[in-house]
Length: 91
Figure (tube, rainbow, N blue to C red):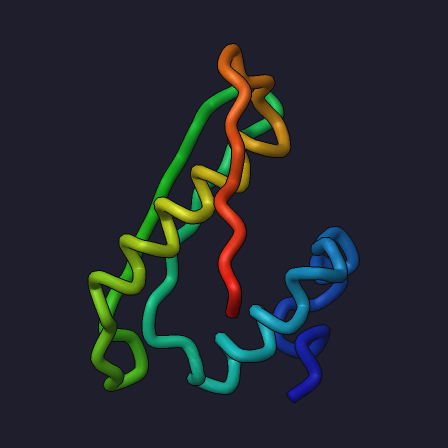
């Protein structure tokens, strides 16, 4: 499916990294979706949808994904006041 036919020239403003998600949405492959956004004015919005496209969402996996996203965001964007050490595993 050509996403540009679906949403027109507005697709030019989408970051390239979002294109696979948009294509999977259009193809009906997504069963769970969580979105967090901030507008230019500083307003924060959030949205989630489960059990999309006749699928069954794994609520614990979605929640775990949110926790991982928070951890990764904080490690990359928020300077810690306390140093942390990650345990190494023999996987």
